[in-house]
Length: 247
Image (tube, rainbow, N blue to C red; front, side, top):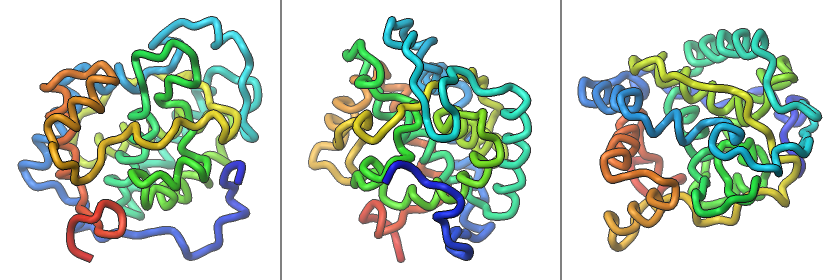
């Protein structure tokens, strides 16, 4: 499968959660608030040109919806943000949109110089091969929610849209307004998706060592790992996705 299109999504399959599932307790609010107080989140989700000015970025990569474009159109980004707010108000999909943005960005490897091999927020999560990674179980539902917005604003890249949706979801859930920069480049095909295994496992034998292995690769420290992990207080666990929680 190349990528999703609105025509391929049957009506009536969009997920819906209850408002109760996305209400924040005080502890949840504090945890989400930590995302904005740490410098790592905007850094991890920066456009590739900001992370490392590589000569590979001079090549025009393209997607079906946004060919030969490095930067999303500013006016379309603003309009897409308003549509995302409406989506959040109607579907209460804050947790899964935060997860989508994080999982697209969380494949980043600071030790790899070349793009797109180093991963990161590059829209690769729209392809089936990456959606089928164990850590991404259920994220196809987030993609289905955002695809109509992507179709409407074709000059916004998937990479920017995923991060815009995630940051907007944090803000609309009661967290801070996260300073973001836009201009991310989409990978052009599934062959550019990262290999499976770059994201954390749900129940590793040695959790602390596993988290350090995963997040040190991205350039994060222990304090930033704790701040990021606290975002799990938004929403709930689902056994069909992580093996944890109640049906």
